[in-house]
Amino acid sequence: MSTYLKREKDMSAKTSPKISRRLVLKGAGGVSVALPFLASALWTKRAGAAPVTAPRRFMAWFIPNGMNMQGWTPLLGTQAGVKNWVATPISMPLEPIRNKILIVSGTDNQAIAIPGNPPGDHGAGTGMFLNMLSVNGNLTSTARTSMDQMLLPYLNPAGSPQPKFPSLQLGLQGDNGLCDRVDCTFSRALSWIKGAPQPNIYDPAVLWDKLFKGFVAPPPMGATTPDPAATAAAAAAKQLQTDQTSVLDLVLAQATAINAKLSTSDKAKLDQFTTSLRNVELQIKNMSTGGGGGSVAGCMPNTKPAGGEVLNFDRGITPSTILTSHMPALRDLMVLAFQCDMTRSLTFMLGNGTSNNDYTFLTGSGTPHHATSHHDGNATKLANLIKINNWEIGMAATMLQAMDKVNEGDGTLLDHTTFYLGSDISDGATHNHWDMPVFIAGGGNGKMAIDGRHIQYVTHPTTPRALVGPMGGPVTGRILIGIMQAHGMPDTSLGLCTGGPLPEIMKA
Image 1 (cartoon, rainbow, N blue to C red):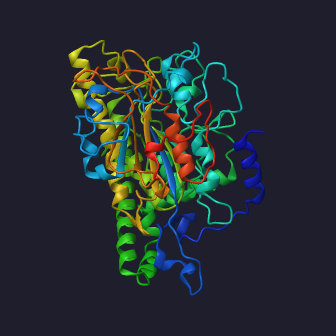
Image 2 (image 1 turned 90 degrees about the vertical axis):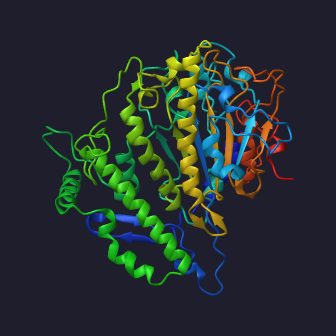
Image 3 (image 1 turned 60 degrees about the horizontal axis):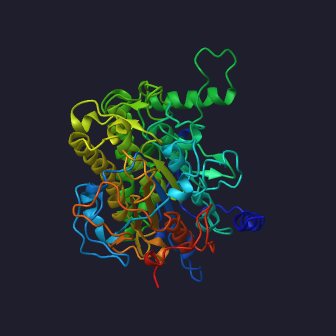
């Protein structure tokens, strides 16, 4: 039995579910809203109670098709890391939180990602992203468990308050037909449990319902024998629509009563949370009524929205309107999911492997991502890739900045989160799996040296650096092993990656 499976079995035997001490407001129609961490409102603050600590969290953020590596990688960098690197066109959005990130360059996944074919490079790189197990030769292996799932007993320890969802899997693109000559799940999922992919939620309105409303969808139109529970849920949803009432309005009286008992800092935190929640409600309502791009038709709060715009399934081209309307809502909901302690583990795919998200809104004309990433040195395509990659990093940076503004315990929400961003490949034209684009952010559970450095594991002989850097750096999975060890896991390997954590990313 593997170390992980044995530990999972031992810890499961000890688990006894606990009710979260986090406050939950309840309103009409079965609506409930979990509040953020409010130390002055917890009953555990009574005399003699154990100190309350903020939860620790993990988020993985996947960007497809690699990057324009000249536009991403800082020129200054050493194996020990330097802090005086100069921001690049793609990394510029990270400047406001520069001291809470760590850019790691020169890691190499080639030996694990490509031991054979199929899949192609995108399917191989996506399928191993958080588990470091080759897709080729392991198509049905039950050993494929991703590190976000392996972390759960440490993020949600037995005997402590448990979040509503042990983990959440989210994505922007939706299913498509670009699967790189292998089962599509390897291109559509980051999170795996014993060989089973965990599917993503793509629609922000569906995510909203899952997090805040507990809405049960009515039966499909035309069904002759509707389920009684679904009928009741639909009636409750219709009443909410008639009243034009938001979730916050339903629980406002309780929130007001609690606010009077909070400390000054917790009052500010509650106000910040309710403002954020209201803003997301308005975003989703605008999307459903045409105010935010109209990408989710016929949807009102508390109803399951109709499908988004029709994709070109064969080429998987996701319209710009979905990117520009869904992404802000998903980004804000991810912050709220952590802030409300609804989950402590998130995976997010900004696009699937071989993504053809269309970036017309950035370039002014049709710009499918995958086709653009096959730049072949074309100056226009390379310039468009910088625009795409800058937007991708900007979405992550905006979310991380929002997390850093949420005060929590002895720091911020970002301080209590470990964030990991990477891709399936490095350079889109060559499909290489070395010189990988990676950065981490947050607190690393106090055990990682996330301090504004740029670590570079390989030497670049030319300036400006080549589009494809040299091979030979350590395996990227050693960063994941470092995150695992920082959160209490003793493992020194992950999938086919061995060697323990990279010492340069860990505190002495």
